[in-house]
Length: 360
Image 1 (cartoon, rainbow, N blue to C red):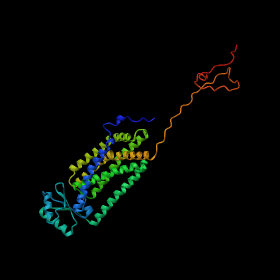
Image 2: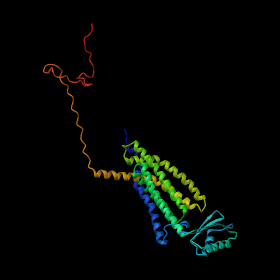
Image 3: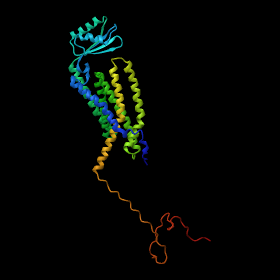
């Protein structure tokens, strides 16, 4: 027999009971990013700081043997009206320059100007991406993310035999994508092809952590069917909480070291990965499971409001057994004797009596 959980389990660690606070915190993180996207779109018609991979342009990688600074390179590019170019320094001798689309003669002139300012400059790599290719890559990335969300809904629905788990997981994933995109919009970090790796990371990590918690909920549903659903989900989340926090913190520490010591070229990617892991672990605990509970509560309210409760009939007590009188005066000799009831002392069924003549 299933034993319901004690009310004491919903104490200071009642995460699901405080789910409205977690919803409010998520909105407080998402709304500034959405406003930043809208502001940048109105201001310069680019919601994000799209890189050369998406907008088209030129990318130069130079090696400068003399001491230099980013401001020095920007001064040289200012002669060509390229003050808004993206300049990233890697180490002590290498620099990456990304500009709008340029002709080959303009590119050669820029290289010559940098070489004149810093003799001994060597060009390591030059890439050119057309605007059509960049727009096509951007559309393919958006289409791929949408297809991935749909496939996840199908798979999770099949895995858990319920679309509720799938929709709750995808809402949490959408929350993570909005947080990461908003973080890049607020910080105006460059969005390039590496940003796709960040989005795939947040999708994979968020869904993985959410499925671990959902699987614990499913296991507990099979063990304690009489426990209230909200209590069961809260207990399941608490059972997986330490594991989720340890996994997230281990990854954040490793990627944080890459962000600090990895150099300027990989810093944007490391920043996106740190944000994606933090928000992925948060949404799995504080968004996906509470959404599942709210959906269950709404469904139960609708079911209770649509069907009238059936009247409960009180059980009628069985009539007491009445022993019939033994053979004697006033009893019909032809009437059959009453059956003996086991354990009834009046019927003699509790103990057998030996009958018969005694042998002499």
